[in-house]
Image (cartoon, rainbow, N blue to C red; front, top):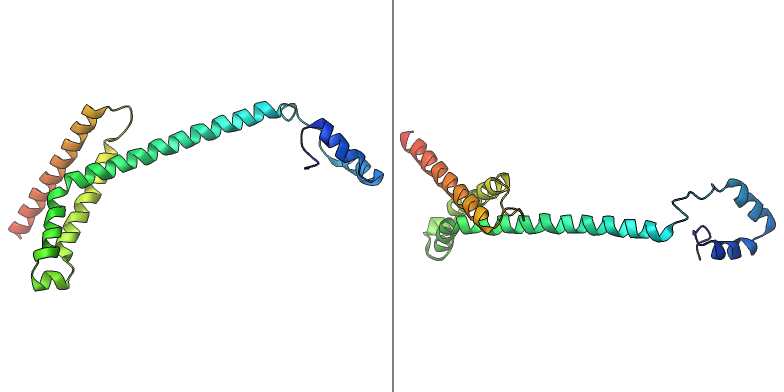
Length: 157
C-alpha cells in the first residue's frame, strides 16, 4: 500500500501504524493535498482521455504513413519491375553490382514519391478517396516530368 495515496481511509490506517516520531515528521513535512488530488477519479479520467486522444492521433499518423508508402510503391511499379527483371535476367555486370543502377532508380522514385505525397498531405482522413487519387496522380506526373528533364540534361552533356 502506497502511504501517500489520496484514499484518506487507507492513508489514515498506514499513518496510525507508524512510529509517533515518523508520523509527526510526515505531518510537518508533507505538502497539503491539493483540491485536484481530492478528485482521483476525475484525474484518472482526464489522464485516460488524454492518453486515448494521443493514441488515436498516433494511429492516424501511422496509417497516413502506410498509405503514403503504398501509393509511392504503386507509382514506382515500372521501376520496381525493371529492378526485378535485372535481378532475374541482368547481365553479368548487373549481377555483380546487384543491379545498383536499377535499385538506385527504384529507391529514388520511392523516396521522391513519398516526399511529394507527404507534401500534398496524401492519406489525410479528411481528404477522401477521390482527392487522394488526384494527389497520387499529380505526384506520379511530377516524377515523370523530373525523369524526362534529367534524361534530357544527360543527353545534352
